[in-house]
Amino acid sequence: MRPARDESRAPRPPADGLRRLAPQPPEWQVLGALAIVYVVWGSTYLAIRVTVETLPPLLSAGIRFASAGAVLTAVLVARGGVRRFVLPPRELAGAALVGLALLAAGNGGISTAEQHVPSSMAALVAASIPLWVVVFRALSREQVSRGTLGGVAIGFVGVAVLTSRGGEGAVDPFAAVLLVVACVCWAAGSFGSSRLPMPRDPFVSTAVEMLAAGLVLLAAAAIVEPGGIPAGAQLRSWIALGYLVVFGSLLAFTAYTWLLAHAPVSQVATYAYVNPVIALVLGWAILGEPLTPFLLGGAGLVLVAVALVIRHEGRRPPASIAAEEGG
Image (cartoon, rainbow, N blue to C red; front, top):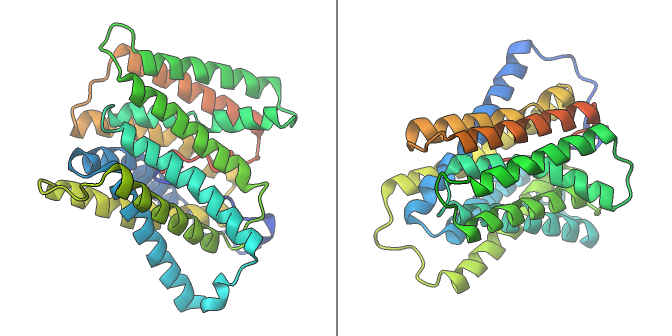
C-alpha cells in the first residue's frame, strides 16, 4: 500500500510505448534498483508506525504527499517546462481520482489504522491488494484463470487469519476493518488507473495524484484532527515522516519507474511478496512486534497467494500492486 501504496506507493505502470528499446543496463544497476524498492517500500510501514506515534495520521499523510508532489512537480517543471503539466481536463481529473483512491483513502486509511495495529500486520494485510485487483477484474467480467482465483481464495483466508489472530490477543475491530477498506480503495484506484483517461507521462501522473491526495488529506485533517500538530510530537516521528517523503515517495518511486522501463515486469513484480517479509522482520527487530503463530501463518497464506497470482498472470503487471504506499 501502494502501498501504501505503501505505501510506500507503486505508480501506474507506463504505457508500452514508454518502454524504450534501450541497451540492456548492467545487472548491478537492475539489482540495485530492486534493492531500493525491496528495502525502502518494505520499511515504509515501520516508518508510518513511528510517524503516527506522535503525529496525527491524516495530517502527516497529507504533509507527506503534498510535499513529495510539490518536489516532484518542481523537478519536472525544471526539466521540461510548465507545458508538461498542460493536460486535458479528463486526464487531470482521472489522475486526481486515482490519487484520491490510492493515496488519500488507501494510504490515509492505513496510516490511521497503524495507530492501533502493528506495522507488520498492516504490511501483510496490504499485501492482499493484488488479490482485490483480481476481484475487481472478475466483477468487470474480465476473464480470470482458475489458478488466479484459487490464489485469491487462499489470500483471503490469510487476511482473515491476520485480522482475527484467534486467542493471541484481540485486534482492534475498527482498525482491522479500516485496513481492509483501505486495501480495497487502493485496489480500486489501481484498477481504475488502467481504465480512466490518464497522462501518458507516469511522473506527471504521479505528481498530480500526490498533490490531489495531499490537499484532500490536509483538508480532512483540518476537520477530523482540528488540534493540528501536537506539542508533544517527537523528533523520531518527524524523522520518520521525512524518510517517507524523501525515500518512500521519491527515491523508491523513481527506482520503480526505471525498473519498469529496463527490467522484465515479472522480475519487478517480485517486490509484492518481498516487501511484506521485510516489513515483518523490521517490525520484529526494531519495534519488538511479536512473531506469533497466527501472524506467521496468515503471512504465509497471503504470500503464497500473491506468488500464485503473479505466476498465473504471467507477464501481466499486478496493476499497481503497491504495498507502500502501501506505502
